[in-house]
Length: 306
Image (cartoon, rainbow, N blue to C red):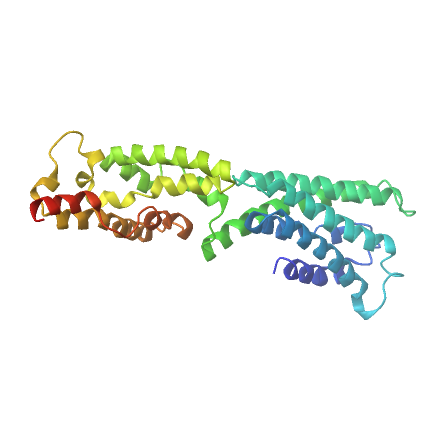
């Protein structure tokens, strides 16, 4: 889709603006770089660069097949070169600007770089254009600014929309979830403050470990923040929240105590569904515990009934 949609739109646009007899350069206004920017945010720079190159070449091919004739004589070789250079360079500039996007404002920066690249390519080809005139320059500038602005705006909008629609966990989403003002983390701070402190410490340790082994540092930190949210169901049954007070397990059968401890995993998964945590983050809840004996309460049970 990242390749087919922009090429299709170019195929629709080109018959209306080529040949460019009035030299308004409107065929270079199409923000095809937006698709590569979105792809870079989802799957990385390498695939996105390949997509940008494909869009550039296929857009030029669409121009060649315009009106089912060979249009080298109508459009001109320079126009074909412009399409390849503008689409390719603009797409590549957008990809490098947003490849590690951790905030939405980077798409705005990406739009700026796309516009600058389009301007450079159009000016470079304008300088070798035998029909160039000074009155072309305002149109070139207008097209470059419009292309960059549209690419940044559409790239950000499509990126956020697709991420929400298909449940893709993007870096932007993870950064949003890492804010300690998130509703679930606020609940953890208020209702189980020591569990919250424990989660922050675990996140700090795990983040360093993830960095050393080359794992996803951001995902690790966010997952650790949420790994113990199941303790919100019964915060007082976990030792870090008792703060030297009475231990409710003293009045319970060890088997019931063990069940309560183990249940915080299932309670956490229920809260994850309720608050619509991304699957990648929710996986930290069951994966931080095994499924074997709760040893402490097993030993208590043995003491009571060998």
